[in-house]
Length: 579
Picture: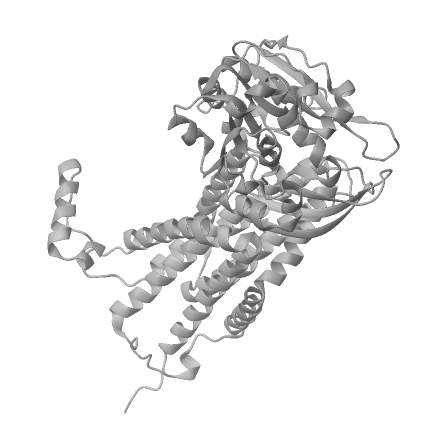
């Protein structure tokens, strides 16, 4: 006569039980570390400082993991608590990302110490996910059956002997015991590695932050449901199954969360457009006083290197609505000043060369993926080498009508040679010298741009100039950004440049007939200084505004005391705007 209360042995045996639990270990570790990477990137989007954000996130995550591991000793039934933990993580992971976005999406709401409070609160999801993840290893250790031999037994005799032999030359060794902790930790670390790699190479570049965090939530919820189903399948008698009211409620939540995430991920493009569009618009408005600008998002796309946003803006006290292009947090161009910016970048410095020499000039353009600067250069017939790291943005310059209306098909210029790659690497691998180097690059808004504002980078630029060569870049105003300005000037001096020629371009943004200062440029030299003759510029804009732009004169580049230059190996974060 059978015992009706007997519990059936696992259907697939002890080895299969262990493998299911270890597979779950891999999945939950994958999700936990990827959640933290999402949070790091979100904090970078809102606050800048990539190195700081990722470093703080890792530190807080490791701290909260430790706290969770300590508190796990107070948890009871391992099976039900592991299920609860995974359901909580499935909810808290994506919800945490939404919390960070919402917290930073209301620029019009002002209260005392807002910046400090929102920054502190934005780190709460890191702690919550870390705390819950800290429960996982102790719970899984108690769930994984003791095993015969070590995990190395799975790899076969010869490899195992080779590994143990190598270890024995460096450490004292002894036969492995049956403690499953080392195996759970090994799989956990492997899952964390997979999470970082898949997030960096697949999830974020291909799907963006919003869809990525929803996919992670779905994976976490499915792990919880799988664990619950597998646990229930191991019991024969219904009343022996662990399906008390709370246990059953947690399972139901897991199923509901899984279904909800599945629906959101299936419509990921729409969800991403709504969520990302909202905070991108708020991010743009944050650059203005409350109520000063209206923003209508037209399109956005995240490449491997930057977020490309096209939007219409209507600014109070300015005539009409204009379309703008924004790269990450920095405006790249607007309808009203496309002409003035590129005239300042290209036409003014080229006026320093005699008209008969244009065809003999060699120009290096770093950045300029919209090809508008190339269009200006084409007017002079110069030879152009262009280097831009973002191949996707270059493709937009060739295909997007908004950019093509300004570049006039300049990507087909027969004296243009475009290289998709890192400018640092390009310069190190080339011995070619240039008469003119133009920097059409993003502003120093985050750690990602530190190398483009480093002593080493400007030193490479200097090494690639001909005797008469100069470097041209737009710069931030020293009045609006004095800390950045001092760090930038000392960095350029440390690279060998000792003279500069500053000038502004002018525009009439409010159409009141009064031209106002717009973009500022520096021409940098470490050798002979050519003379600017604005009448040589083949630019209607320069012809109209030469009286305001010129005369362009050379000045000695000052050095600020007590300000370190920015270096790749010794960064000065003052060069980052808002650092």
